[in-house]
Length: 177
Image 1 (cartoon, helix red, strand yellow):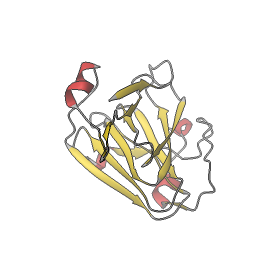
Image 2 (image 1 turned 120 degrees about the horizontal axis):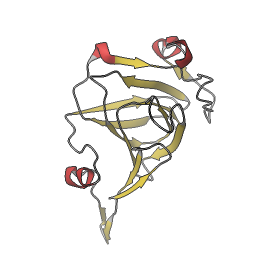
Image 3 (image 1 turned 45 degrees about the vertical axis):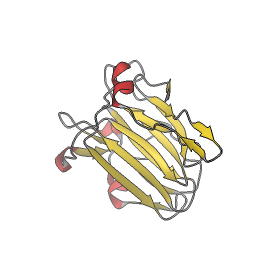
Image 4 (image 1 turned 180 degrees about the vertical axis):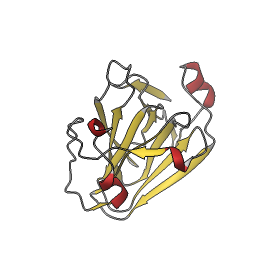
């Protein structure tokens, strides 16, 4: 696997290293020891799938609060998404800055998202499916979020928004916390 640290500390794009032959290829997409060797969490206790019917769907920006803050490894297994991550760690040198990454079934990249970052995405295709590997069980009482259009983050979504959940529309701006 190839690890590329992105502009937010601890945020990595993880690309497979395919071994090819006449049949196609084989590639590792997760390895606990390779993650651990880099000081990253490598053990994930839960997997979840997000399936989205329509291009332009926005989900997020979501995070879980301490002590249930989650580290995730996110991969798009069908279609494509515009992934957005916001640093909400108060002591971080990149506090409130964003990172944007395209994940797709075609590029097979994953995004390693450490605890303390908010995460969301917009689908760039119909029938987009996203696989989440999460380091701890979900705790509903710790689930939180901030607005997808919060001016503090300056996010621009590449597509017109076609679908967004009422819950995501109701999240407050970060400054209002």
